[in-house]
Length: 137
Length: 380
Image (cartoon, rainbow over all chains, first blue to last red; front, side):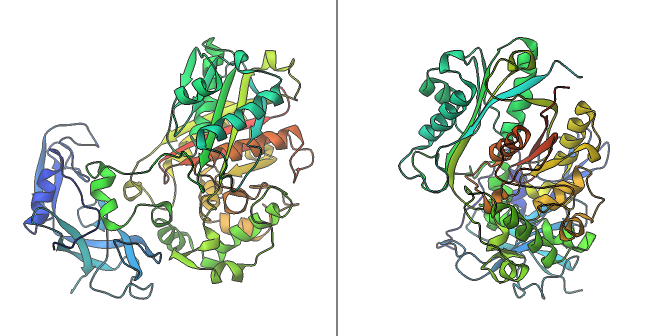
């Protein structure tokens, strides 16, 4: 992990719980206790109704593939092998950017709406990134 | 709210376009501004309002020797200049200033005196997008398109056709960077950048700039150039993170901005003779045609394939060749506005005969923001 040379997030007070969850192998979302809306990225109020009464919960980790590109341009940090950059729709509703891993990085293997599940890629002792892989069923 | 009318009385681009390694970014602003002032028969002493994006309007004002009573540094990406036009019109109407200069310049290719770009890893994008490899437009702006293609039934050929038709317009423009005809096969066989986007579906990276001068329609009659009137304006924004767009098949910012501009102008789609849609990538004209209401959802690709936007078609689109073939220094909105003004003055290299109403529609960031301006060469 010492050689991880890609850009990493710097957690803020509003997002620390999310990155703590990732480090512990949990995908944590937030939900409004008044209007029940789940949302992402993290913030201590509901973007749908403005309420500050929100709770953190463990999401299922299930998602479907919403859209993606396969980057072919070499990058010093991501190497010169084509790789996916994807947006997934979480089972709970919110969408997030990620990479699809553990499958060929080809249009044939990456079918829109395919079922996915979260997996965590450890970058260092503080940060693990949530990535998604084809669901085993 | 329909206010008193404002008009463009000065418009110009930088003297050179494309590769300008002998000029820094601030001088590109000045070069465009001096050309626009000459066009309007004005000097810096006559300007009392300044707007720019990316760089600070303070830098531009001081470099040119302007002491403004109105300053706008709205910087929401490449459509910022549409927003400046809108804000300037309101400011002139309100009496905050009389004569506004709006500039854009970017040493996008040569990077002489250009801003360094970096994203704070603690920002929302820095935390939730950048770690996955989305740092530049080719890997970010492109992400929604597979969803769009699947949901509305557009093919890779349909996407490629956008670039082919725009090259037809560029062929008529001596200042365009790329003028040789291309085919759908050429586009699909060009280098893969970020599947499904090939090189010829992506905009150029060039140096250049442009400037506009606006004043009240009442004063505009006394200027040397034929006034180009602002009939209607719109602006909006959605999200800085493309992953958080409500729907990958349509831009909310486009819809809101476009609707505002149409309503304010009081025109119908059939009144529009000429259209500019900011095309950083080949899918943008498709979203623009649909979100502005020129085409039903999913029909834009067929509309272009059927020839309606090409030379001789009923809705000439991106007649300078667009960001795909004309030029793209980083914030292309200014060049879309310049082409609309040329068309309304009747001096465009690929002039649309008899055009009376032109729309310039811009995008900022990656579907983050939007601005729409309706122009006419007839006083309302």
